[in-house]
Length: 448
Ligand SMILES: NC(=O)c1ccc[n+]([C@@H]2O[C@H](COP(=O)([O-])OP(=O)(O)OC[C@H]3O[C@@H](n4cnc5c(N)ncnc54)[C@H](O)[C@@H]3O)[C@@H](O)[C@H]2O)c1
Image (cartoon, helix red, strand yellow):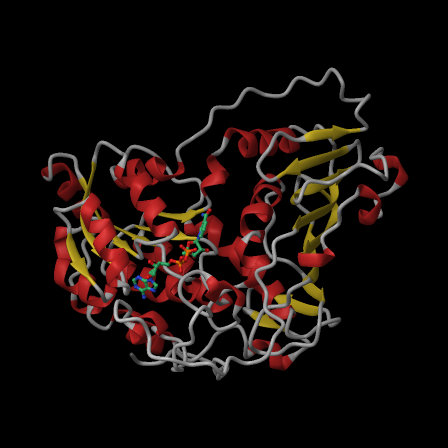
């Protein structure tokens, strides 16, 4: 499989790749957009890019909002498109999101992007260039540069945005944020986060190729990624997440959910550095087992600095002893950890937050009488719709999701330089000590 050529891409190329057609559409002001919603009997007309897999779940959840009218469906796989059309027979259908955005213009009010990771930024960028609010699946983007660009574009255009981390709005995660911010365990000095899933691939390049299934527009599926022949069971559906050209490995896939609560609770910004322990890079798949360490600058909820350690695949800890916590943490060494979760080490205690289950506080005796705050669950999808209608604010807008994704993706880049601390200058969007790493922050977009 050819590697996606690392290359510095200009902002102009970014625009051309994703939104040549959309750029021609007049961009409505936010006020004009609001007026349009009102005139359409309060309905928000949505267009969905990627309607199989998680896209199907997104479509279902967004369309349960009473004010949503599903106006358009787009998928590169005709079978998946047909299944979605059965549920929303009034919607227009498309195979190419660029054509959809250009054709619909003012007949659509918001766009939902649920494609594989490498297409998030090109599709979201095209929609936002056309003035559309965007709900985009996680992680926000495939590349660090794209995360920065989407955040800046959303801000510039004043668009409503939301990243698809629906557990962010669960009562459990909201409660965990409140507990940390209320100081229940004091200033936090360490976070450990892990997932025993394996969305990596340590094998050889794929040699078995065949014609893509008749239902699949392979060129459109590849989108901006480098051209290559179709291989069965390797890319579509779902398997792409293991591969460096399309997905972000376990760190990007599950890490974005599991990093979210500590990141939000501690109000973290950009890491100072990231360093990984994993096998030698292959430029084909993400590592199947991986440890990534970060340091973040102090915030009002942390100690002087915040050390963060991520573990995945076979390197995932199973007992507390493997985390090498300080004795004062009060967590018994044989305490069995959940398969996925995070653990906060504070000056006054420890909070274990399984993914997604109620937190446990340590030492258990000390917190036996602790009364947890009552918190209501939100609906992450409806929050986006209500925000588009001017009735709410989104909690995982690109202003939040952009920096969170940049931090995660710096760890993904670090996988290509094992055992090397990548020093990060967030303002300059630059690794300061390993020039080669900067080539992986953005890639050349193929014209398709
Ligand atoms: N929030 C969550 O809990 C959650 C869960 C699973 C997946 N996801 C995210 O959802 C996204 C999709 O993941 P998945 O597992 O559903 O993948 P998938 O491969 O199973 O499905 C992707 C869908 O998008 C379509 N598609 C691919 N390229 C397209 C393009 N250029 N234009 C239009 N349609 C296109 C595919 O045909 C398919 O229907 C990923 O970003 C993933 O990280 C989020």
